[in-house]
Image 1: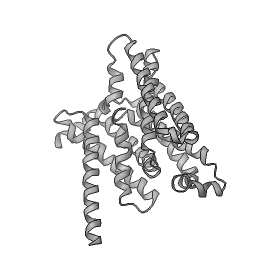
Image 2 (image 1 turned 135 degrees about the horizontal axis):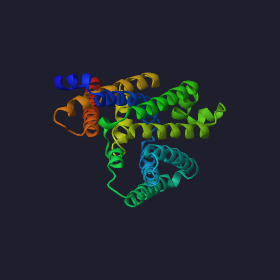
Image 3 (image 1 turned 135 degrees about the vertical axis):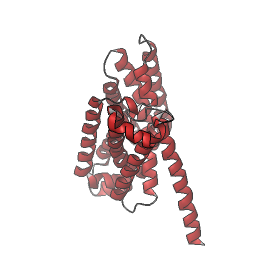
Image 4 (image 1 turned 90 degrees about the vertical axis):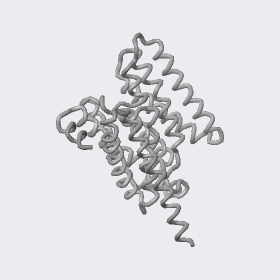
Length: 276
């Protein structure tokens, strides 16, 4: 740990990595809480894996993979949201098909791109140590947009997450805010690709919020706690992976997973003791 702290003071790439973890945790805490409460983790997974198609196309055309990811994520969120609203009985099958098609399109375009795509592989499996300063500005901008949307439409989002029928009776356009929620999930997926990669994105999106949801008494408290947990996991994961030279993204998610399991076991034991 001391070696990591010494290196942090002198190496810009570690400072960027730590900043990326903090910025990503803000989006995790806010949007991840909505995902856990609304129980749309599978929809979020569909959006996340469809993103690979946009990244592959962008890389093939010589454009920014993150730009392609952003476009693909937003389109996937709209398509999956529309499918969820209109064809709920076939929702799982259609989302699974979109998930597979997005991955297949990405792999096909990657295979047709000359050379070994090191950068794109880092987006797949995560390389927080390679986040450039320009991407930090993009992540901060997306964070600001998410925070602004939540502050502006806090009550409609709350109503859509907890009681859609009541929201409709009160005149809330449920479909619009549901699609808006999925678009925020898409933005968050793009942010998290920078940190842990596409393969591990869902874990960091849901695990801090799931832990916070076991103890928080309000959605706002859950968001704050999930954000702080995300910051703790990313910071500690970086520190633990530094000296043994372990993959930072995988270490962060493993740490979050162990914390969730321990929290669930401890809370289960406490509830059983309370009932006894």
